[in-house]
Image 1 (cartoon, rainbow, N blue to C red):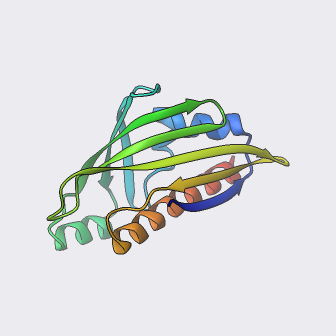
Image 2: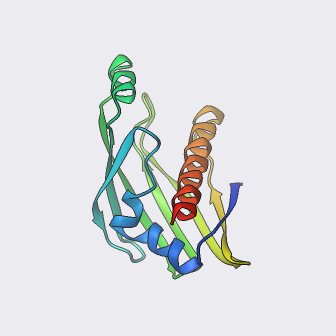
Length: 155
């Protein structure tokens, strides 16, 4: 059973789609405060790969990562399972960063629909292997949507 996160943002579905499916778009909003996202591979088709590096850039984030023995930069991979522009995008994230846990994949499905002058975003997020990691994932996805909403509100 998937968890659901919803937001309405002040941009068209086409604009949100562009921000979600281009290197420039992804780099402009995916990273949490104090981090930067650099897309290295984006093959937007079913079975295609998204590969990016998230790097701590703010001094307090760098210090936090170093304090806990975590790398300042980490590479992430996702594989697209559905592409239906500009309404539906699905991808499997490679979960290979959990200590003492075998790598696995986690599914996220994003649905975009017109809502007045904006776009309703509904994310269906497959749980991770336990509640703690699922809550971390949901907090990260919610932060991404907050960043996206703030970005389009500025434009």
